[in-house]
Length: 303
Image (cartoon, rainbow, N blue to C red; front, side, top):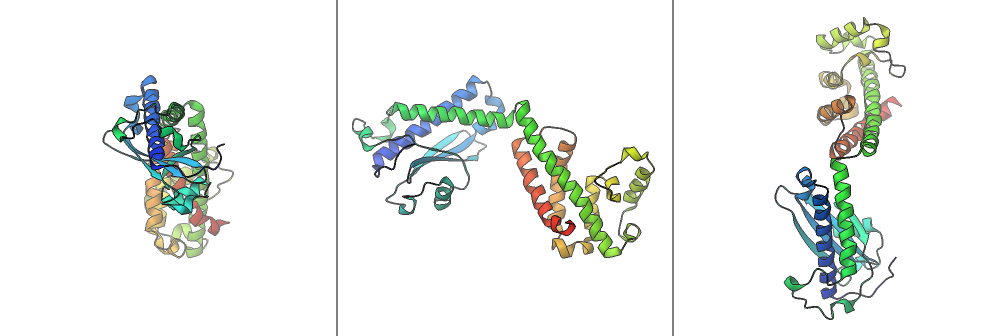
């Protein structure tokens, strides 16, 4: 762990920033090429920014935005002099909040450096050698290898990573569908009474499916936890019930369009989970976020 240090000169911060940027790029690309993963890795086409922050500890924060063009990268540094509010900050989230770097993807404390490292270097930017500070370059190179490995695992996970990801989203799907059926039945009962199944606005195709599945052998649709009649309906039909009976739901959901839209957007990903197809990390995160929002809206009604 490095100790607090005096303010660094602009030249040092330029050298540090460039060494980290170049080392990251070299390590990242070398890992991609070594693994013959280039054509499969859209992360290669992205815009990186390396932010070197002269806070209580010298800290590097990377943020990026996906890009459809070629790989590009840049750096920026934040000094104690220009940003005095960061001088004694040692929490990265607080740094990111102050400097508006909320979309950062990774961060590390920079190894100790001091102003003497530029004494023998021509600081014309284009002439700064990549090995001007070999130890810092090697440190950043290793970081680039690490990031490439993380990104490749996200896109092409091994079995354990995929298993953990799918376990998490399936648990959320189970909670979502269970709570959603209870919520819909509860609201329809409250609106139409115990005879809601005949009084609510329910499409004939939905009613036919309920009747047909009820006629199946009991073990076909047995669910020891979900005893609602809505267990006989498919997921898209649940959304249909809400849309067709919006008067029963608007006091809870307000302008229910957001809710119906969220359910509709979840459906393709939900089907992939139900059929045991591996999700990308982005798909999994999208599903988890939207499902969590829906559950939060309906949970108080059924507890």
